[in-house]
Structure formats: C-alpha cells, structure tokens
Amino acid sequence: MNEAPTDLYESSAENLEDERILLIVEDDAAFARTLARSFERRGYTVLHATSLENTAELLQGEQTPGYAVVDLKLKGDASGLACVQLLHAHDDQMLIVVLTGFASIATAVEAIKLGACHYLAKPSNTDDIEAAFDRATGDVEVELTERTTSIKTLEWEKIHETLAATGFNISETARRLGMHRRTLARKLGKQQVK
Image 1 (cartoon, helix red, strand yellow):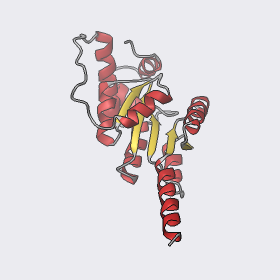
Image 2 (cartoon, rainbow, N blue to C red; image 1 turned 180 degrees about the vertical axis):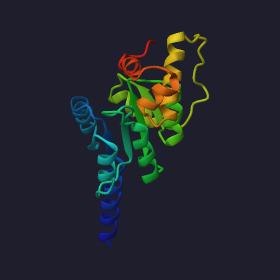
Image 3 (cartoon, rainbow, N blue to C red; image 1 turned 120 degrees about the vertical axis):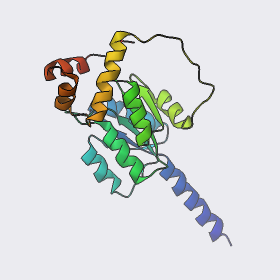
Image 4 (spheres, rainbow, N blue to C red; image 1 turned 90 degrees about the horizontal axis):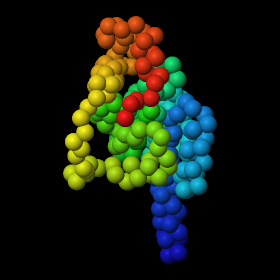
C-alpha cells in the first residue's frame, strides 16, 4: 500500500524534472555560460548546443528539453531558424524562444511559423525569457503603436525578408538585393536602428 504513493511521487518528480530541461542554442560561449548559470539557479537543467548539428546530437540523448532558447544568428551564415524547425519537429510541445540582435518582422514571422512561441530582441535577460515561456499564447490586448516606419527600418526588413527566403545565404541574398556581398555583410554587422 505504501509503495504506490512513493512510485507516484517519484514518477511526478521525474516528469517535473523533465519539464525543467532547457536547451540553449548559442555560439557565443560567454553569453551561453551566463544564461545557463542564471537558469540553473532557477532550477533548470541546462543543455548547450552551438550549431544545428550539435542540437541534433543533443536531441538523441536521454534528456529531452521542454524549453529552448535559440540565437537567430549562429557562426558563419548559419541560421537559428533551422534549429527552431528541428526542435519543433522533435517535440511540438517544446516552448522555444528565439533571441536575436538582428530583429526584423520577417524573421519573427518565420520563427513563429517554424514553431517558436516567442521572439525577443537582445539584450534580453533570464526574466524576459522566462516571461516569454509563460506568454506562449497570443495576447489580444497588446498595445498597438502609431509609430511610423523609418527608411532604415524598411531596408532592414527587406534584407531580413530576403535572408529568410534564401535560407540565410548571404551571397544569394546580396545577389537578389543587387548589392555587393561585403556591403550586405557590413549592414548585417550593425545593430538595428530603433
């Protein structure tokens, strides 16, 4: 009689632990380490991947993340959107937040379509990310702004729309936009004007 409650408690504890496994896909080691420490202090078990291939390897392991934080731009020309797609295909209930220093409407839309529950511009901290996990559903009460769009923002949106359409291939994006590859790389290296 006493065994059933103990087994039930152990099973519940295991499920709770599984729900608190977080995967961070980030190629900036210092930022990933800081983020991991912060989440570990909050009771998460943290896994870290630096690429699409590394993410796929981690998903084959015994620990299945219920949460993921994915950087949009990984080393080279790699896109975090491919990681979002892989994670969502692995577990469509996983809560995925995309972080980026290169925010655009085009990439935000693609991230959500591929399975992310939220999209945050850097710098974002652990509180912001955890709040985004809690806001996985839409909010009809979100405030609409009357702010007009600047030419720089329109250019940024067009660049990222084209980047998403080319699978984040810089050379093909530059060709489609009719600009030199180095010019495009320079524009991508700058922070977006707010």
